[in-house]
Image 1 (tube, rainbow, N blue to C red):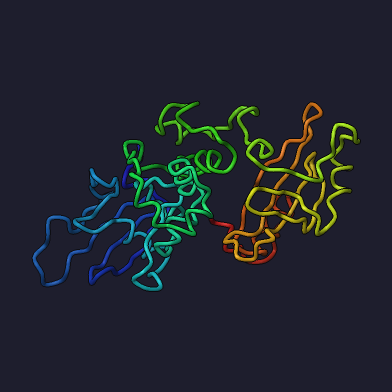
Image 2 (cartoon, rainbow, N blue to C red):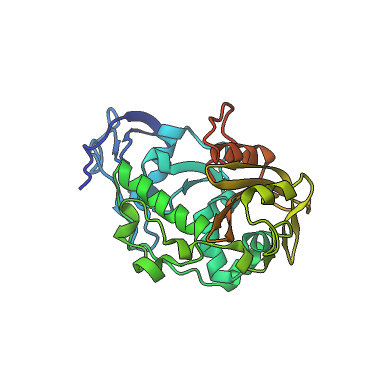
Length: 314
């Protein structure tokens, strides 16, 4: 059970004219003002009180995550920025789970949130972004019962589990593990291999994929993936090869959307050969080319020497 005294670092900050001491476990203490009468919440450590409607923790009427983000991340650029809970647990206010984003980014830069919206609407995220008002016609189900204060390890597990669901599986958590609950805080959940997404089964075509009459090897597949050739074709667009390599039994491919207006035009994917069948997996779709280069290197266990790209934390 995490307590207010389970922490490593403390920071001081000023927020809306008040001074606070903030701990990296999400606990906050407001300091009393000199020459003023001590208030009920002054000089007391607290995680905040849960808002039963939204699931957020509040200090008095203030969302406590804004105080914590100010202490550890600095003040936001402007009033249009809000705090994003990266693993979507609104009660995980550890600094590593928080970031300042615009309201648009808060919805569309989080893969977990995007995945939920895709399941809700039946549309891909690019279609939703092009017409965000479509969300007004859907009632977003609220499930906040699973949200709670967490340790650093539980925070990491939650992020890994939900990211795994968002990026690697077409199976809802409820189908394998019940509704989202305590399991998200446990050791990373990896779905069985048959549940992973094979993109060839969802109206996607890989023109260079070797046929049954050709040599069935990753090396042969890579030879056909010359820069500029079509790697992936859908009903909407095409992705052409930028570069490819074979590493640790995987054919890793970096490609780009031929549609220059695409919001996330850069793809990093990998291909494996299992029991004579080619399995295609999307690793990351990226806003910027630098992001695709970074994930292309990460897939090869190469160190990334430059600053992290915009896509790294998304």
